[in-house]
Length: 518
Ligand code: GLU
Ligand code: ZN
Image 1 (spheres, rainbow, N blue to C red):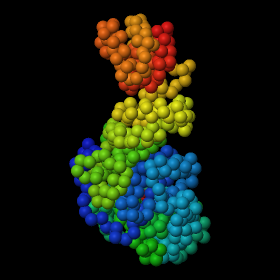
Image 2: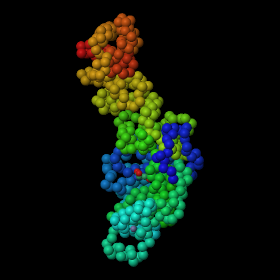
Image 3: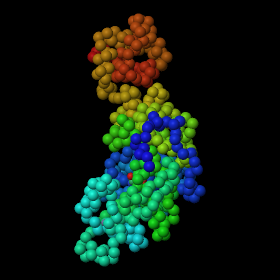
Image 4: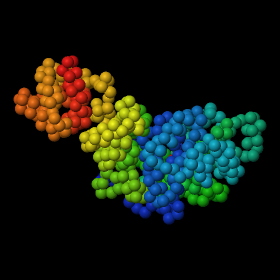
């Protein structure tokens, strides 16, 4: 097995450097069932959302079932807040789960904390069938074995001490009141699977020690509950991050045991999605602000923009197509062209793709999506009052071409909605553009606009050019910048004459007056 964290990056996401295996996808002739099984700890992060997306797209592509399962057996780390955030994340992305929390399904419950009886029963079956055994080693004994292995330059790990205890030995341990964990009995030999992403992968099971399924206190571990649920929920394909690659050789023989016990019918097909790298060629970590899903919601990314970008982290629809809708992705995503190479997370690229999706929206749709951002700042009501809706409808075409994320609209067009007594010019922009020499410019502009018979963009344009460029002999930049700052509050704004028209005569003159007086 190669450690891909050191594989050279291809400047990803770069669909042309795709090293994916384009080949037939097994197991899709029968109904496809995939799952997204996050643990509710901390904030949802983008790597997780990418895993959800790839599974969701796969299910949609094959008309299969998307199971949403909550892996919440680690009670010390799980929070209800994180659980709620997971559900909200899925809904924001538009991932409608067919089975899972709140919707139910035939293989529930879908929160592992509600399935403890299932795990206890399955653990017992594994033990009684000889697939697992009780291990009585104390922590000190395990440490000593590891120390010895280290000294002899052998790999550490459980040495199989309790694998073949006799009935007498077991009875003696029990009589001595020793506590015990349940360990899986790894078969000997080589384990091979055909990874959907990485092709054939082999592990020598000599390097995979017998692992713990159930703690001494009876609580089941990920090692048990994850594959057991995949089996019982009849999952056909497991697409998950490459960080889980090393759990697959443990899980495959457990799946085989469950089949032999009659608890399951098939082993899922596994596919390990490439790492997502952040700054400095390191795995994108929870500490990177752009790793947190909530960042994208707060900034005002569009769900379809983020989805498009996340899809490119390890996949492309072919050719050099990089812009696509969710439906287009689902139609193309058959699971056959997932990249092996790590993908580089590139926020600039994510912004560019989101900007493309913003421009692709119908203006009314964009206006509707901007409302919560303006409303959050108290600039409009939600839903907006009729007059606010009309201004917004007129303003959106002015900013649609220059917006990357929805939040930017607040700075761009907030000046049209802010109550007059709260309107303020950005101090830095005021210092640059509203000095002493701006006064005659603003006075001439006010005079020209005051007398204007017709309040249209064209009339405003003509009047200001005449007064400032011809009248005062100014260059356009020197003529219009003070006016722009005085009425919009900033040096960067939507087109000036349109902005003045939308603002109306009264507010325009008041703001020019305030700038002249100030
Ligand atoms: N709960 C596990 C995780 O979030 C699931 C891993 C898997 O997909 O198998 O890491
Ligand atoms: Zn032991």
